[in-house]
Length: 263
Image 1 (cartoon, rainbow, N blue to C red):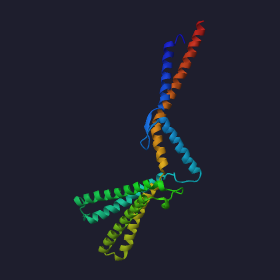
Image 2: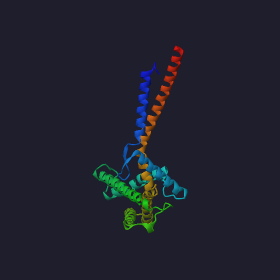
Image 3: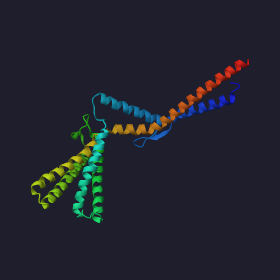
């Protein structure tokens, strides 16, 4: 428009700049889940392909990609914090002879550190091993033992050994304390109960990690996290360009009416 040429030129220039940035947003570079150097468009295409494959398997009845519910994860964390840690602290305090009538001192500090390290280390190891074994999960979210490699079987044997060791240590310690306290009749029962609680808690950590999603879902989540900021930026450019285009159209109409009135 003649009377609005400077404003119209500025609007058009800004709209063109925003359209250019929107088009280039998908040409940015991201790092894939396995260290690949990809453009945003390539990452989005791979994410869409994985999403279609997961959806196809789920339509065929596969449960391999199902995630563990939030409540289950919270319950597992609470079990480790509320059950395992106090039991381990009691065990460590018994070993280092903490005087609970006057507990403050070096024995209590050592007991707390050891109990936290032992509980956290065991839970982390079990979670890591369970997470790594998801590639051997069948369509029913069960471990396919026949297809396991020698290394995977060794890892599972390590899990069994770790869980069994925790149960045996707790059994022996509780039984010893029960006998020393004069509760010979209840010593075995209490020892079995505490050992069973520790074994169930450790197994829960492993199976929660094992049943939580799949490797494909991990890749999909990585691609989605990489692409999302670029898509948000692209949408922001498009929205601003659309708003400025509307302002430019309004400016043209106002200028057109002004020229008609002048004539």
